[in-house]
Image (cartoon, rainbow, N blue to C red; front, side, top):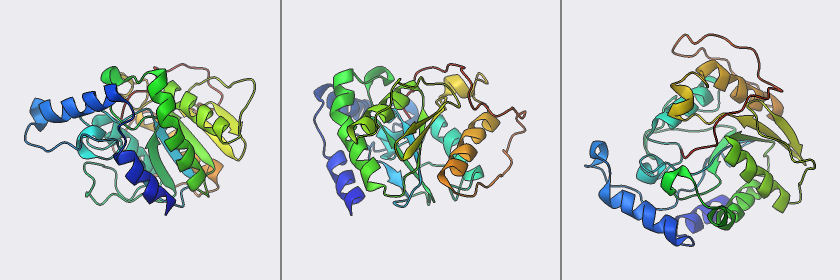
Length: 254
């Protein structure tokens, strides 16, 4: 199937010399807490339900998260936060994502990134972004039931707009990123969400219930029946951020 062929191409990609050098250096030098582990050290493909109606889009794999485990948003704090929310909304069968063989199954959702290699400083260059965008375009085209794109951060929002435009779904004026912002992109609804980085989650900028508002909204927009599990920690309830103009930090790697 197309998604499997695409994943194979992604894993073998060496189009960006700076990113190739960085991801392989990180995989070789490692970090102390993972010194005994074998790092993936290659581009990270998307994963999830081929029949997904919701695409969760990050910026790029984290150096010691996806670049270590081989699965986006897996093996780091950002992933812990994201998948706990997806579990509460009924998209995931478990609230954790620790390794490629951990038993995680997504239903109705697919998780991917604008860039497939861990970038230095969590920031790919515009040229590196543009070389990788065609993979996202092909993913979006292959997800025949796709209805909603959740962009985790402003850079993922920008990547989603670029990929949609390449597929013939441009929008003017260009919508601005905000947590809870929504925009119509042809057959897709684009939904903005602060990135679940430690900088956002540890400071309280993105508490669990605020993330849940987005995942539940994505389920509703996609025509799925959202499930409402309570967060493990008693975070204070907030009002729906739909239409909020609050700004978050640019999307980070996951």
